[in-house]
Image (cartoon, rainbow over all chains, first blue to last red; front, side):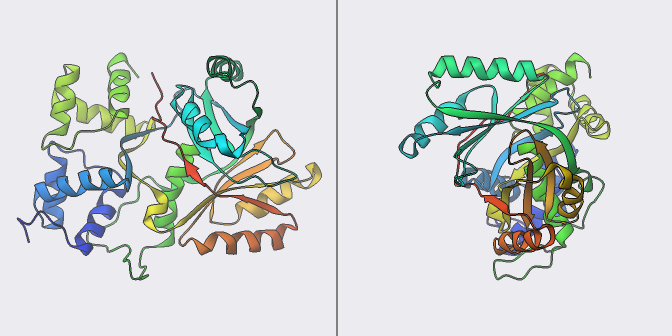
Length: 200
Length: 147
């Protein structure tokens, strides 16, 4: 199996598990993974590239703890966009430098009328509000109702569960056939990691 | 963090090469030694500046459930409800925000069906309605923190 470029289903699961905690810090990290899995380096590289093309991997790089870098003011800026304009406004907002997230979500009337959610992270509230004001002027968004929800207390953040845990490479995590042997902690920690990036 | 660290973090936020010697590629771009890049990444991880270095999976594509939910909690109940909500292992993080809907948290579950099940149990325990606001569409953002 060492030379085939196509990884089997099980090998793909093993690779997914192996990189869940991050990439090995070795000069040839893809070779390190390949050796551990008993496959070729080029198969690992090709599979990762394919996953990126397919969108299974949305980013390849690093997760910055923005709190540690001084980005402590996080605002959820929500917009009440006419349904037929959601795509257009969503594109505009997502391209703005200040915006770190842009999702369409359902309204929950009457309590919640906003359908487009963006996050703006800044080092201070005034910096966030300045960026928002610029964004509104620049893209003529003044006609769209919005609200700014700063967070002022963080009650729970599970990202800490993530570090320091490692699992053997040959631990099969999840099959398409509903057979789940991954621990719930593992599954949650990886998802929490993503959500933490999104809203932290 | 010195200036080299900042350059390195900025560079790595743009992605990491899928080439046989990726650290060497990055090192050459920044005028550093390969070993120095690896050591600096390790130090940034150890110091907690980076929480992770590697690929980020699209959570939903892995077969689980993920949603953003909110509650409108009376101020006098806030502490109690916070404890009740946070006791659910499915709650990733929980922020108090300035709005009538004042409690916002992310739920992550093993299966898509797990979201509704968790919300049902949460409403029963707290006595408050949970507003489920799952993602309908994600607009691409190049998430980046310029240093």
